[in-house]
Image (cartoon, rainbow, N blue to C red; front, side, top):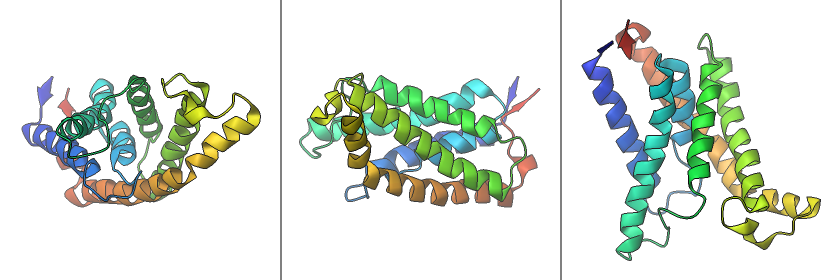
Length: 189
């Protein structure tokens, strides 16, 4: 396999910028590019393993930055916590939405941009409510009503994540289109 040096640096830069963006103080909670990165990586990067790693690395680096700020007393957001590995798995799974995009077009990107945060919302809040994440669902009872309360708690985050995914998907796929599909190759066979 032969790596395209420019693409490699572009992906590294994308991961770092997204990670740094996520730790910006005052940023609306949930307004982050990681959902869009997962869709973009799945749709564009031919190497499936690399496509799965990109959004996870972005999350890991931003969590690492959060932990450094938290440990220094500069942020109230903890970077690493019990059950966090489940978020990494969920972000990896979102890449499969990008894999499902066979031919990139505006409608498919729009639908994927709605599907990724929706799937994440449903799965992550179920995991939270069930107590598998180590947080015990913010004390919500293990009943249908408790599950609905848990989803209701996360609605502001969900709305913001959809808005962010639509915007960042437009930026990523728009830049990809403007730069030309042929100039953006991951691996030459």
